[in-house]
Every structure is written in structure tokens, then in C-alpha cells.
Image (cartoon, rainbow, N blue to C red; front, side, top):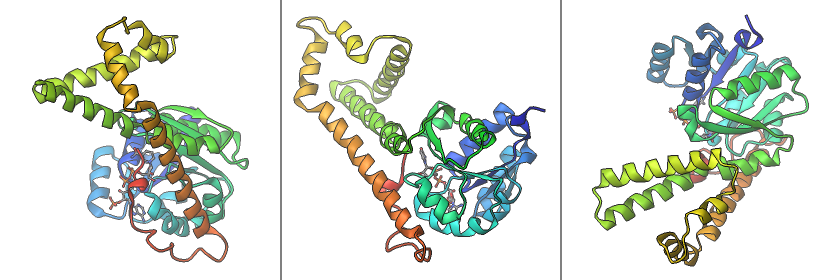
Length: 300
Ligand SMILES: NC(=O)c1ccc[n+]([C@@H]2O[C@H](COP(=O)([O-])OP(=O)(O)OC[C@H]3O[C@@H](n4cnc5c(N)ncnc54)[C@H](OP(=O)(O)O)[C@@H]3O)[C@@H](O)[C@H]2O)c1
């Protein structure tokens, strides 16, 4: 048995991202079903996951974490305070905690859990089809083995990039974590434009989606910068030149940049709010409104 096969994973908050992780880990045979345990507060969700993946799904978060070498936190940001209070006292020094919670800093997590070995990661929603990209960083207390475990778990979601500077994880929350939102909005606008031209909606949808997939894969395989690829298809006086004129007049670059900066600022706000809630003496109930989801809590 390889080191990967031997790992024991506990997943807290078995929602959408957690399920993608469970499916990927089992498909990779990175874990066997009996080495994977998840927790969820609702019985019907527990039963559904247990039936679908033949794994153990329990109601209590501490139970999911107890025998795990790596404990994954996949709850929504507004739940993390409560979950940290649940888990912190039971964690052992040999365990590593991997959080995918948007905005949750290593500082907030290690202080909220009173635990030094933390991995902070930011995946994105194409993880549902194992085409996600995750940016992650590990606290200095993480051992080489713990980093290897984190990498193996994150690979279940697609590609991963480890960074040394935690700031890049916060920035990735705005760029790649929130990135699908920008592209879905572009997709939606182009489909609507196609319908406006007179296409049936389904055909407009297929044309736009295939164009986005094809363009992305072409750009990924090409060594050219996107600006060069765009120049290659922009003939003098042609359709692309006419279209680009309108895109620039509508400030497309500035609007996209403003959107990324807004998401980044919101990431920092979420982190600051969590850090404030985990300072010594402030580990009681979350601050006003902290249990209420906001749009910015919905990353991906
Ligand atoms: N979705 C993305 O594309 C994406 C991308 C990057 C990062 N993230 C981060 O990943 C995390 C999970 O996102 P998600 O989209 O998977 O959310 P999700 O589907 O809502 O998953 C969270 C799950 O946790 C459950 N839960 C609620 N309270 C709990 C508790 N006290 N203990 C244990 N579980 C509890 C929820 O149950 P209920 O269903 O009953 O509420 C839900 O099933 C978030 O922090 C988000 O910021 C998500």
C-alpha cells in the first residue's frame, strides 16, 4: 500500500465541495471508503452520501475528525466559528487541518482551533468535474507528510498550486475562486446577445459554451499571450476590430478588474471578521449578522 492509500481523511461539512472531494478521492483510490469519514448535521444528507459512496457519515464533527490524519473544513464561512469551537479541543498535534473556507486565514484558524498545523486552500467550482484549480499554502508547523496529504486531497478537485505567501490564497479567492462567476456572467450575456440576434436559445447556448471551452483550451495549449491570439484573428476593418472597439468603449478591462478587486476586498473583510471573532476573549458567539450568509460568502 502506498503512503497515499494509507491516509485517513475526515471531512467536516459534507456539502457541494466536500462531495466533489469525496468522489475524486475515491475515484483516484487515494483513500478506501473505510478511511474516509464525513460529518453532516442533516440525516437525509448523511444517508444519501453513505449510500452513494459507501463511506461513514456521522452527525458529530468531532467524531469525523477523531481518527483522521487530515481534517478538511468545508463548511460555509458563517459556520466556521461554531465548527472551530466543536473541533478545537479534540485535535491532536499529529493532525493537519485543511480549510477551504473562503476568507478564513491561517491566523484565524490556528487561533480558533488552538492548533498550529493548518493548510489554507482556495479551490473553484469546476472541481465538481475535477477541472478545478486550487491555490494553497501551509503553516510553518505542517510537516512534509502533512503537506503531501493536503496535496493528495486537493488533487481530487483538479489542479493545485502550492504558494509560500498566504496573500496569494486571498488573491486567488478573488481571481480563480470567484473566477467562474465572471465567466458565467460573460457566458450568459453572450447567449442573450445570440438570442437577441435571432438564434434559438439552445443553439446560442451551445455555440457560446463550445466557443469558451475551445478558446480556453487553445489558449492553454498555445505559447502565445491572449493578446497575441486576439491580434491573430483581428483583421483590419473586420468583425473582431468592430467588436473590440465596443468592448473597450464599455470599459470591459476596467469592469473586470474592478470586479476582481471587489471580490478581493470582500475576502479580506471576511478574514478580518473571522480573526476578530477568534481573538482571545472573543471566542463566544459570532458578531452581529455573522450567521447570516451574504453574497460574498458564496465563493465559487
Ligand atoms: N462552491 C465553490 O465553488 C467553492 C469554491 C471555493 C471555496 N468554497 C468554500 O467551500 C466551503 C463549502 O462550500 P460549498 O459550496 O460546498 O457549501 P455547502 O454546499 O453549503 O456545504 C457546506 C455544508 O456544511 C453543512 N453544515 C452546516 N452547518 C454545519 C455544521 N455546524 N457542521 C457541519 N456541517 C455543517 C451544510 O449543511 P446544510 O446543507 O444543511 O446547510 C452544507 O451541506 C465554503 O466555505 C466556501 O467558501 C466553495
